[in-house]
Length: 72
Image 1: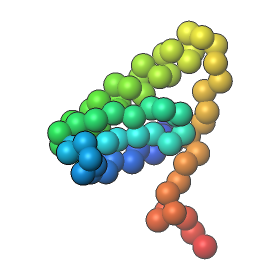
Image 2: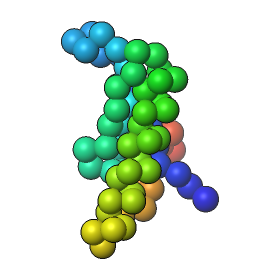
Image 3: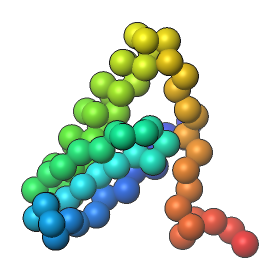
């Protein structure tokens, strides 16, 4: 099973790490370390999916692939 791609990057402005899931609109989290940001975004993903299911909203399939993984 494919899962959602997660981006993690350092934000100078926020002085910490941001993690986001491109396929799930507005699903992101903050952490003081990359590990903390990952833990928080996994919690956000769970909440995002539960909320979408409860509201009977469409849930996009995992599809985002960063350019680094694209094959020419």
